[in-house]
View 1 (cartoon, rainbow, N blue to C red):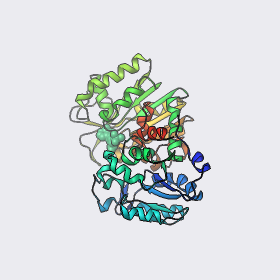
View 2: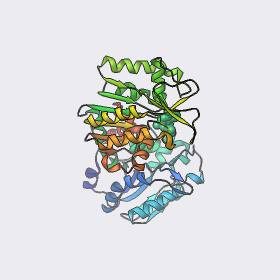
View 3: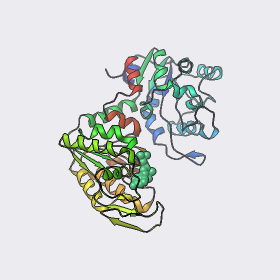
View 4: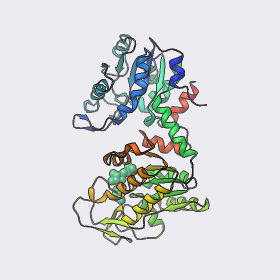
Length: 395
Ligand code: AMP
């Protein structure tokens, strides 16, 4: 059963109610400011609708990894300031997320007003899903709304533990929209192309195993590809190979073959002797000793981009090379352009893939930019997200 929506909630009345919104405002920081405010903007629709309906909004998020300690450089205060600018409304800020002072600040809220709590992860109880911490959070809420899609694959106090202690619960607009767009990958118009890149096979093994028999074409790039090439007995030089994952890579290849699916690996590579900007590079089909593959080569990029143009549905997560360095960014750029130019329904997730799309100003040509890379990869495996399951139980 799908969780209750914001429509259901607002229709049943939220005026004067304390609505606790768990959002994912875990934005990248740069210096003492916010590097990219996409996640704040993505949370606006839910907040605006609740504000207009007269709710008293208590907004909570984590930021970075303070590991249970108050770390001034991971305060959500700058996020509250940016949110206030974007909303065009004041956003009060509480110096903590639980306790008497916070409870008093929540009581002082008027209808349609906003209070942002300090970083949930200043308390170790958040990530441990500690039941007492969850109860303390629940004391701030008459109603609970989860809009934190990017954290919904984690069973934490603010995404799971507190939910059973609040009488009325619902999914926010962002969470609902993410699930609807990702359902397209679970039930795709075919052919479905899945493009997976990034650093480690070990991080993406579960999703590779799930997608190999499901995708019509699974195209692999990034450092991950070298473990697959090693599994095929090809030379990989000094490239990042996870020797202890070679058997699993073979299993993924076998699963794709058994299902009659296509699994594509790079046929050429941009190589260098060191991972540095301004080192000499070459394009080779085979990686010699002493050299490492740092991007897919032009032929591979053209093949992957052509697959994107041919597909009806595309999922892309993870860069095709070390795209932070210009000399190794071309493969990711060509693939990004192919996905954007394709008429396919496309879903792109993962911070690096989104950064590549944004750098090239291709965002408006993508069907859906997911705000949760990890959560979206769990969902497309057909796994139930703990944060969503908690909302369904609370219905
Ligand atoms: P992930 O977080 O797993 O999506 O991996 C992203 C990282 O993978 C980026 O920082 C890339 O620089 C890195 N990466 C991609 N391709 C390669 C490669 N061929 N060798 C080393 N690192 C890579």
